[in-house]
Length: 415
Image 1 (cartoon, one colour):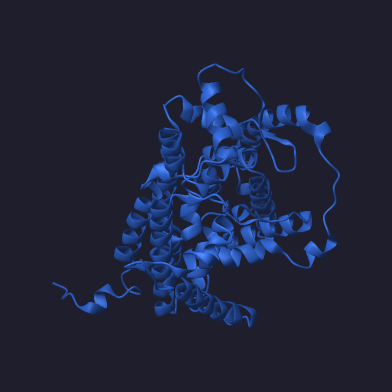
Image 2 (cartoon, one colour):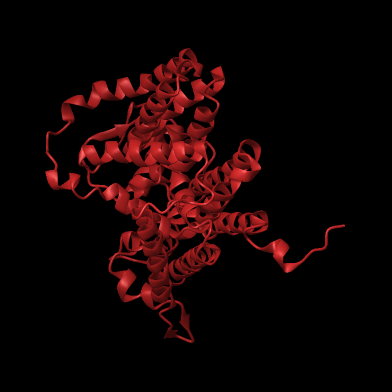
C-alpha cells in the first residue's frame, strides 16, 4: 500500500483535491445571497419582459432589449429569460436559474476535461477551472439577470460541439451554438467567428478540413441564423454609421481585459469609485480598515507582471502547451481577439466572458511551474471574491456605483 505523505498532496502531483475544493467554493459563491443581485434598468427590463412574454401578456417578438448603441438586441436575448419566466414567480427565482446554470457550466467543463483530456495534459485545464471558479468578476457575472451571465453555459456547449465536430451531432451543435451565442450578446459573434475561422485555417493547413461533418454544421448554423435573419430584417435600418477612433487599433483593449480578468483585479468595473474609497479598505476588523484587499491586488499585479515579462521574452514553457489547448488559445486570442480589435469596438470587461474558461486556463498554463504563484493567485482571488460578496451583503450596495443598490434593499425600501 502506498504510504501517504505531505508530498502526495502537493498541487503539482495531486491537483484534484484543490481543484474540486475550488469548484465547490466557487459554486457556493455563485448561489449565495441571491437577493443581493444587481437590480437596475437592464435587470428589471429582462425580468419584466421575460416574465410578461412567458405569461402571454405581451406578443411574441424577434427583438430584445435596446442596446447601448440604440439598436434592439436579437430576440434570443429575451427568449432565454422567457424560458426562465415559465418556472419563476419572482426575480429571485429567475436569477437562481442564471446562478445554477453557471454552476453547471463549471462542473460540465470539469467533466469534459476528465472525460476527454489526456491525463498528462489535464493540469493547466484543471487549474484554469480552479481560477475561474473563484475569480471575482467571473462570480459577479454569474449572479445577474443579464445576458452576459449566460455566456459561459453557451460557451461550454459550443466547445463540446466543436470538440466532436467530426461527428454529425457535434458539428450540428457547434454550428447552432456559434450562431446563438452571438444573439445572446454581441461578443458571442466574435467568439463564434474567431473559433470558426481559426478552425478552418488550422484544419486546412493540416489537410484535415474534410474530417468535419460540414453538412451537419451547416444545418445547425442555418437553424441558428433563422431568428438572426428575422431580427436583422427588423433592425437593419437602425444601424448607425458612427466610426471608431483608429487609435483603438494601437491599443487593443481585448488583450488588456484578458490580462485584468485573469488576474481578478477589475472589480472597479462594478464598484466604480467605491472600489477606492471603501472596498480597498476591506475587510474591516472591529470596524477598523485592514487594507488587505489593496495588498491582495498588489500581489496579484506582481504575479501578473512576472508572467507577462516571461511571455514577452518568449520564455519556453515546460512542459509545452498541448496541441489541443494551444489551438483554443489561438482561436480565442488571435481569432476572437483579432476580430474584436479590427472592429475598433470599445471593449468593457464583460466582452471577455465568452471565451470561458480559456483566459483562466492560459494563466494556469503560464503558472504551471510556479506553484507558489499559482496557489497564491487562486487564494488571493478567493479572498477578494469572498470579501466582495460579504461587502455587498453588509452594505446593500451603493447608488453611486455600477453595482447599484441590491434588490433586497430596494424591496425593503418599498415596504
